[in-house]
Length: 93
Image 1 (cartoon, rainbow, N blue to C red):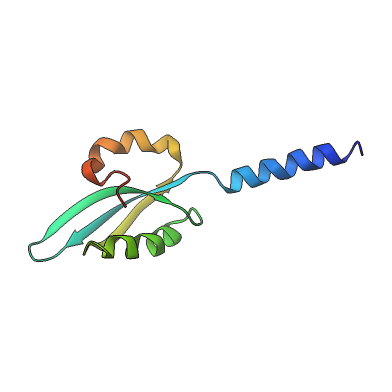
Image 2: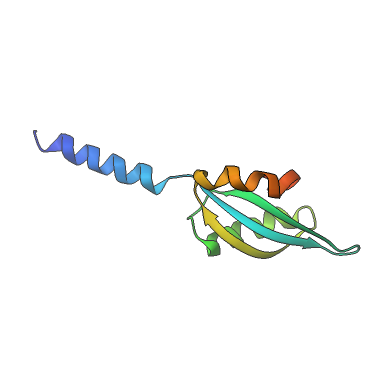
């Protein structure tokens, strides 16, 4: 019984780390007329550039935007420094 509590605590720490918030900054375009934008989006899947691209492409496509690139993925500590640059596309998609 003494060994169960440390095991439970260790497992809950691993689970909470695995579900940490993940965000990606990206560039997208829309044609006719050409428009470009930089944005920041929350990623609900695995925190990787590949997963972010797979998740963002359909979100952006709903509004006729085409994903050009994922600039990077980061946790909540990187949000504030990107908010001004993303403007209206901050956490929009």
